[in-house]
Amino acid sequence: MTVLYFAWVREKVGIPAEQLELPADVQSVEDLAGYLRKRNESFSNAFSDTRGLRVALNQEHVSWDAPVAANDEVAFFPPVTGG
Image 1 (cartoon, rainbow, N blue to C red):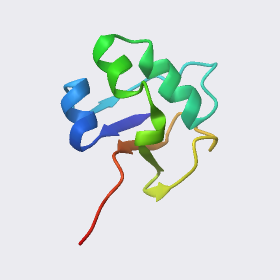
Image 2 (cartoon, one colour):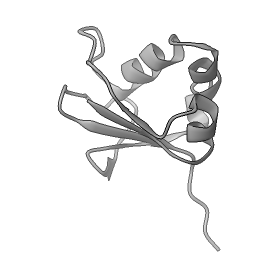
Image 3 (cartoon, rainbow, N blue to C red):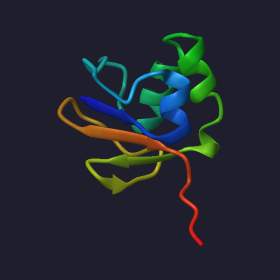
Image 4 (cartoon, rainbow, N blue to C red):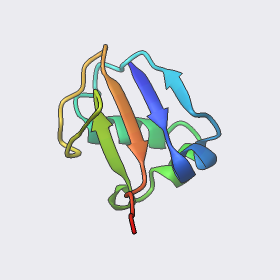
């Protein structure tokens, strides 16, 4: 799985992207966020409140209960504002 981090999420976790071996108990985007949250303090801070995050699965906006698979690309980013 490819996981991408954008904007302040990238700043908090300290990396722009990574390849992950998908754990067997990770079935959804929410499960993935929970898995990442447990990695270390930086990830815990970034994923402590998922209400402040948006997620894309294979370049499409999805809800947190969307299922994930080993070959997916998941991107985490803050809400986008425009003007």
